[in-house]
Image (cartoon, rainbow, N blue to C red; front, top):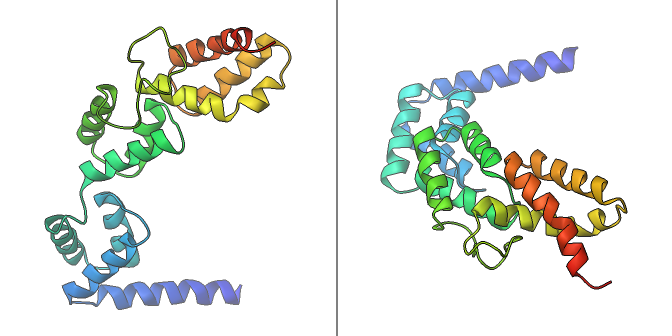
Length: 199
């Protein structure tokens, strides 16, 4: 009990010390340190600095300055997030929208970036990785779903019953934010891929 109390007091003392800071350069430096690990949204930086106890006017000043310097840009952050998801951890549009919402990115920015993604301006080559070759340019969600299924192909191949295999694929895609139609189409395509493969 005593150890926990002293930790809380230490945190409270730290917040009081930061609330007493009048130098905008100190807050700007704290924001820059927070951005060292990866890019962040404006809302993430604001939450971090206000949560640490810095005064709101100094936090806003630091955010304004970092925006002027190009270190904070929600448009660029959202584009990079979507490209990273499409490349490394495929997610459906619903999941990406939710993730960016949690990061505090404005809904209009998210809508614009996802519209750009659908138009083919973001992410990987939509024609190269498609799970469905019938369409000339499949949606980015179809491409991402195909990538996710390809990553889990060995585990899905171990499921002997085709119906259970489709159900597992559907569930995997749904958990990763793909819409029901994409889940259904890509999961159904598993059996066609298996039949067209070597016997």
